[in-house]
Amino acid sequence: MKAWTNLLQPDLILDGSVLTLTPDIVKQHGLKGLVLDVDDTLVPVTVSAASLELQQWVAEIRIYTDLYLVSNNLSESRIGSIASSLDIPYYLGAAKPSRRKIRAALQAMNLPANQVAMVGDRLFTDVIAGNRLGMFTILVEPIVHGDTVLRSHPIRNFEVWVSEILGASITPRYTKVNKN
Image 1 (cartoon, one colour):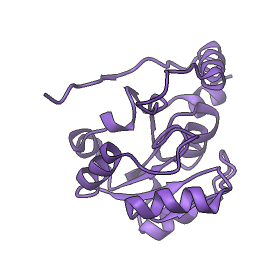
Image 2 (tube, one colour):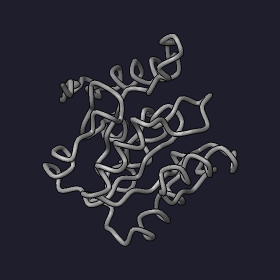
Image 3 (cartoon, one colour):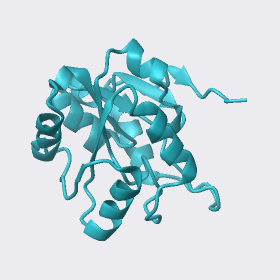
Image 4 (cartoon, one colour):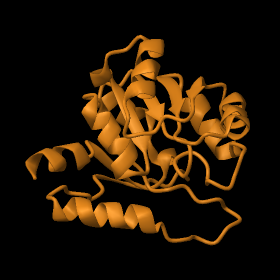
């Protein structure tokens, strides 16, 4: 049971979307790179373009850290379009929690795993994959398109429930900060 707890335990849990991951948090944890999940981490699964807010976040965060997209999605046109609009290299069809394409992203960034965060909205794919490689793992809330009604995330809710039963603590350690 302890091994599962270690695999499922994110190093950092943000109370908000990836947009709440600030340069200060990146610097505080000594991160030189971020491997980013795409679906529901950067854009809703139904969207094939980066929002202006996401583009601004990427422009700000890339000053402090290298970025790479690693998605389980198989759609070259969709993931390629998102990656192109953000000017970030990518791998698709990663089959996370498989480590192969994340390891390739680490090699492409020329950074050791312990200086790179795996950032995603899913425990059983993103967090497990990152923890298996010795990366810093960051769990974010799924991103929701502004024009859509907030929908529940039953798979994520199930993952959190199982993880807590196995002893992982899935409580946010940073709260959302309003930029006003």
